[in-house]
Length: 418
Image (cartoon, rainbow, N blue to C red; front, side, top):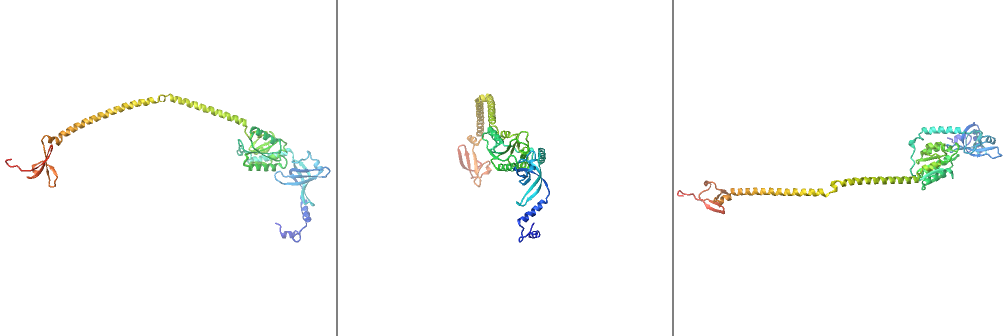
């Protein structure tokens, strides 16, 4: 950390500060001692005016938002075949240079090499193997595209054929398809950051259920942004399913492997993100007809079963069994009544016989025949049947009961004459 003591040792302090020119000169001296370096990047701005001796270009890192200015002799720029253009990938041999007057740092190039297609393809292949090893191409991480998304996000170039192909084909299949279109650069140095921003915006929109990234055909260099590592990782990280529709059938940028659905062309994407209203209407009619036939078949089966049940005797004449059972009930009722009357008659006869026997054996019948019952009272006044003359004394009062009543009498002991 730089402090007052360090500044004092370097010859500057708050009391004796360095002027700007001194600082600029020291920085220039330090930078000019650096050696040359090989730098790789994408050309974003290119200025080569006729009549000038120096060409200016800006070199950008495609994987980060970092750029540097590069100058080179105009003769070097004219010697490059094919001529450089913006968006081209190059390797530059240059020496860092600090411009004293402007206080700006740049690279002074003495050799510029355009990166060939073979090298680009080799780098893409290395990145493909890296992403595959991380599992970004695995089928199990692919998300299913909604059958009928309520909102469709489209990222494509402004007024491009790809945009027209997606919109026309999708709305031809489903006229009420709802699109939110974000136009971005689809080639060059600004393509990746603009596509990433649009992707983030659509992923945050709750109405968007699928995102389509579309671009027409082009060379390997034109489609290079769609094999960019930053874009591939962003597509893998979003929550919304992503459809890749880049170039033509032979074109397979890395985005095709990372996306949840790969379409060969933008036209193919327009056909696959929404169902065909005619096909769905036909399918609905077929299902309705199938359901009608199934329902009619079930009704017919149940009707035949019902007819079979109704043809059975128990259902053909439902009152017949009841009538027969009613006759049986009446017969059993009459039989029961007769049995009860016979039983009552037998019991009544037995009761009459028992009553006659009881009457014949009872004391009343005996009294009717002239017999009497003599009773005496004990000292306590209780009546007892007199069974022996020894139970009463002379002068005792006894009660004599005959058939039609009772009389009292006094006991007298009979004499000899009696």
